Every structure is written in C-alpha cells, then in structure tokens.
Image (cartoon, rainbow, N blue to C red; front, side, top):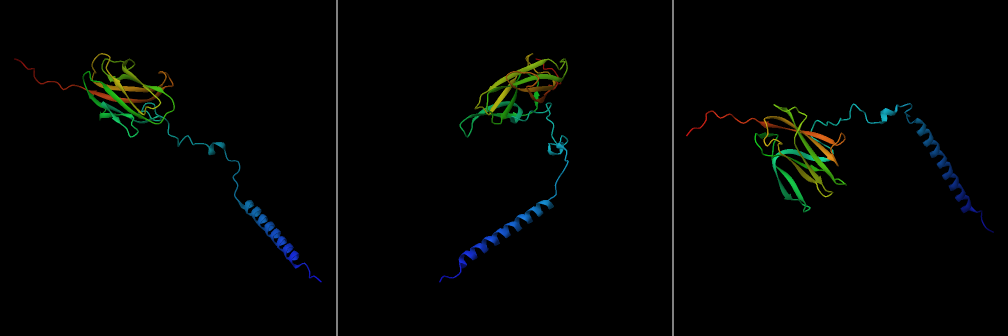
Length: 202
C-alpha cells in the first residue's frame, strides 16, 4: 500500500499561501496608492520656466552664449595649445586707450561650434565730440573655421586717429550683419592727450 500523496498536498498548500500573500500585497499596494496625494487642476504655466526668474539676454552688454571669453586689449599673441592648435591670447587687456592711430583689439574665445561663420565688429562713437553716434568709425571681420576656438578683431579709426571719448562696438556673428546677428556690445574709452605746459623753443 502507498501512503497519501503528502508531497502533492504540501505543494498545493504552498501555492495557496503564495497566492493569498500576493493578493494581500496587491491589495495593500492599492490602498497605499489611494493614500498618495494627487495634484489636480494645476495650471500649465506652473510646469514651465517662470519668466520672473529667467535672466533676459542683454544685447547692450558683452556677448555671451557662443563666447566663452571676450576682452578689449592693446594687442594679441599666438600660442600653441595643448591640442597643438594656435590659440590667440590678449596682450594688455584694457578698456582705456590713448589718442592716436594705434588699433584696438577685441580678443575672444569660443565654445565648441559645429559650423563655420564670421564674427563682425562695428565701432561707433557713443560719446565723442563731432560724431553723431550712427556712423561706423571702424570695423573688422574674422572668418571662424570649424576648428577655430579663438579669434580677434582689429579696429583702426577710419579718419586715421581716435578722437577722445567713449566708443561702442557691436559684435555680430553669422554670414552677414543683420537684425538677427547681434550678439552683444563692447565699450572702450579713448583718453584725451595731456596738454603740454610750454612749447619748446630753440
């Protein structure tokens, strides 16, 4: 004679216990989900960037965005970068220059870019005696290739010498200068030459 199929009985009991346990866990998870606070009727603007906390872009300030760094300087030098690329670095950065015919340089460093373009600089007399502020007194442009990370603009006065006063330079980027190409504005001052006290005679 053979005994009762105890193994089958125990297996069935284990399956029933597992089934009841799963039902209890599922029911408790449903109850826990019902207790979660739900947010209803929330306005869409609450999920968007708040305009009062967003920083507006200032086109009347030095350009940002694609420009990592940009300064006015008396000159520039070329150095060999760690990737063996030629990097342009400013020499004697300043926003004040002397009267005369020396050029004013704008030296910049760019973030990584994926196409070539041009950087333009258009200089106007903002507070200069004899200039209306709408006439371009100096301008330059530089072609930026795909591998270029630095560059410069060289501004020479159209009349051969800088007049004392305050100048502004509009920085544009793209294929040409238009209403959409403005990136920012740089400013510099041409200091008046000191007056000589007496004339030298021989």
